[in-house]
Picture 1 (tube, rainbow, N blue to C red):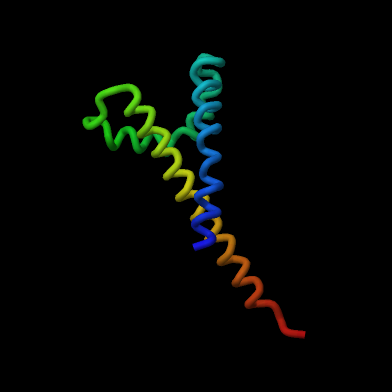
Picture 2: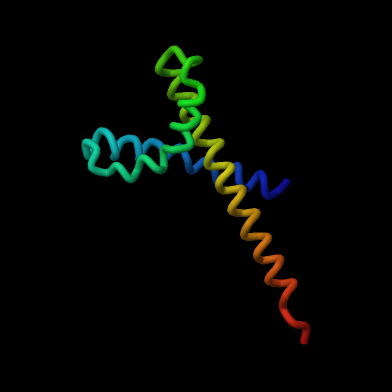
Length: 97
């Protein structure tokens, strides 16, 4: 359970990433930093899945940030699990002295 809490706290990094990526890729650089859209992908996917349900801009923003958070949580938690699994395997395969 401790890993889930740490992943949930690390997933809060999605809020500044979302704000900076949205600002720099659309408003500031007028589309010249299009690679930053990759950082907005989890929220965009979540919004596209909820396309017919959303009616106002605030609900669109709320669902987008929630999608970003859930996407980043899944990515961070998956990477943490993978790293801990590789560490466990490395410790298991070390020869005994």
